[in-house]
Amino acid sequence: LLTAMKFSSFIIIFTFAQLYKTSSASVDKSEITERDNILVATDANFDKIINTYDFVLTAFTMDRCGQCEPIHEAFVKLARILKERSSPIRVAEANITEEEELTGKHIKRIIPTLKFYKKRHEFMVYDVEKTNPWKLLEWVENKAAPAAFEIFTVLQANSHVDENEIAPFAFFKDENANELAVFKEVADTFDNVKFAYTFNPDVYKAYKIQKDGIYVIKVADDTEMYKGNGTIEDIRSWIVMNSLPLVPTYGAKYSNLIYESPLKSHVYLMIRGDDEDYDDLKIIMQKAAVHFKNKLMFVIIDGSTADAHSYLDFFRLDQANLPEIRICNLTEEPFVKYKPDFEIITTDKLKQFASDYLDGKLKPHIASQELPDDWNNKTVRVLSIAIFDDYIKNSTTYLAICMHKPSNDESKTMMKHWQKLGELFKNATDLVLASLDCEANEVEFGVFDITPTVVMFEPVKKAASIYSGNKTFEDLRLFLDSRGLNSSSGYAETDDVVNGVQDSELPEMPHVEL
Image (cartoon, rainbow, N blue to C red; front, side):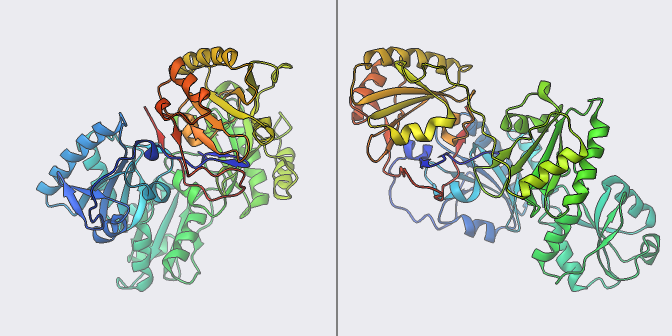
């Protein structure tokens, strides 16, 4: 649940790769080359790699990334093991410092990112120790295995259905049936969903199957039969829609299905699993969800689990706030959130909230701090996200903004410098200093997740420069004194900055986890 770097109407396109980009000799990067048995992935050869090899475990890394080196070392060992075993699985690395096009196509903001490509289908690597070559080997060999398996007995079928609760299941008498072949191919595009097929008439009888075909068998609901056109895309979409319970609980079992669903508007109940009201609120969610089938997806987030952390952070909640209801539109980034105006959750209130959302009656919810009365009279202006756009747009001077997080030690030091610089430049007629608290305000600007960050907007075109020099008082003073033109201060002035444009296409921003 992360957004591209976008200030509503002010847009900054910027990547760390541009900060660290170095010149290199002209080489043909479309050819597939290897280094230490690792495929060197580039903008020019990436598609060729995943089309040439059926199984490719890929690491997206960048220069000056502390967490990337241990992964590289693990990949070197893993690549050697796979080669010794004559495995069809290959290992690849892509350095996005040099290969910028891959940033927008294959990764979002987390660096390093690991992905597994199975017959050109992409899977995130998130549930394995990424620096342990033996754990990676076990994981990747498991993922490379065929995803659909044959059921031979009724007992085996019952065990499979009971274990999975919702099970894609193909029944065919002909082993060479075309739709069965497509079913197996579709299975390879799913993660954490177990597919089964059978030719045994006893299994047909046990599940009251009268006709060959593809089914989803559900422990707590009626069996569904596929009746589409038989294409990979159609079967896959149908299985996604029918492999989720009415109200799934977010976790490894359903996470991919939830986000692969064509339903991109989600109603979340965030609640601790041990909350005394959990069962009652789950029933309320189910009663409401029935009225919005094929329109909204209702999802429960167990706030006591590790899986919930990113959600609580995204919605700016902690466990003490729960239970809470939110709606989020995931159609495109930045994702839009909606908060109800009620505290006591009932079926009727939840249904009304969902209906108002579908009718376009709700206003998006954006966390914004309350400003002090003298916010615009301070030597360093105090901004909130609510006034951010207008303040930049209406500024008639150079405007330097420090994005900071009060809980961050480096931000604390930076703000001490920033306050002193505010005093130093308080009489300047063409420069204003300001600050934005990225904890009190909902700031999901990609690169600004690395705080503190200083951005300078010029007064007319609002062109922006992002400072990347040393965060010392003197270097910052030089940057401000030159109004962003002193190259010795090490700032990143970018020709790729686009300002005053709405709804532009943005690359997803890489975020380096230091």
